[in-house]
Image (cartoon, rainbow over all chains, first blue to last red; front, side):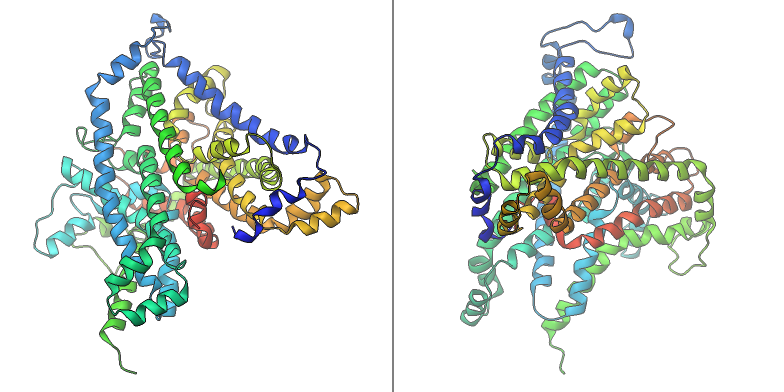
Length: 304
Length: 272
């Protein structure tokens, strides 16, 4: 959004009837209230009840904080949050580093056609249906004929059972996530690099021939907002991550890839304990709200 | 012209980026044209006689055909609704000052962060009680939770860039706000609206969790059907990959159209 258009939002305000914006906003706001807030309140109420639809004869009595107590003392729930955190700190540094390298390659002058081609192909992983990414993962990391093992064979390391072993499965979903989301990091960094004023970059290039110094002293300040956005958005995305992992491993083997969304889905729709699952979902929602407040606080300062 | 090492490394790096981005996608498409024997071959066959057998199997399968139809209907309907409801809201956010505006704004953005599992549980129960389970309508409505914010965000951005002088002139001619919105903002904001519609379509088309939980036999979407093959002993890999290709191809084309806006769409504009 160009800075020059900042004032107009106030200028045409004069002479407008006060209720006009209400009529424009009401349909969208009412719809979101109905489909977003109402179910959330319903989930909150459910989280205070015993609500197992596989055992309807027990009824759905209110049990106070019982579900929350059992969730907070449930080792598996904490383990799933731990696995989610471990996934985040595994994939994100790699995505950031690879993303930065790709952005620098795309920012460098020359190679016009190849650069345009690379930039366009970066969009392909981002658009690929997450569930299909999982299907591709199942094909590539297949124990018997997967291309990953055949590649390992070729360079002399014996292949192993990726999806059948805990560390292999974790690595496999991490690799697929790195494939899908590194382009996102690259595009954000590229946007940051292109914000560096041309003359400043030119002057700096005359001063120093060190690419590292250029990156650290000239380009880094322009990359920081993007980096902050990435750290926060990716944390929300990993908490949301379901489709690809569900297709590839269903959280297994054992609990090796049991991310928090996968675990809650299992409690709700395999065990049908919707009371407990709702309590877990509400806790996840609280975490998400904190993350989005942080995102807004840091990145939308100018709006407030 | 002498090729320097740096140029060579640059070219090599870029070629690696292209290969990195396309390999898994290529591997899927290649597998979709292979026979089962070629897929299971070890070492992998790079050159093979392509077969259309897998696609024939996919298009003959009423389940896949129906699922693609369901996905198409649901994604189009939810996108249309999101634009219909979101564009006027964006107009109000772009052009008016009112109390609670920033709170409203943040609420829209927070929806971007929300895990679908939070809503999937209560919506499942509500749909069960109201008989909406396994209908197109329930998915069309629930997808609005992420489509509406994206449409509002991108359209607000677009509407803000329309010069206010235009509407001053129209107002002097006696046009009311609804006319101004319809005659000035909608046509001039059309590119932004189109971009937001494409994003909304892509996100709805790709969605799996809600579709998995809220549908049974009648309204299965394409991703649900694609994942449903993944059980049993002898997996029909060629057919699975052909289905995957059929699902991914249309959204990839859409994504290429809006590739310039990808960052904006995925960050809700927090980075410029």
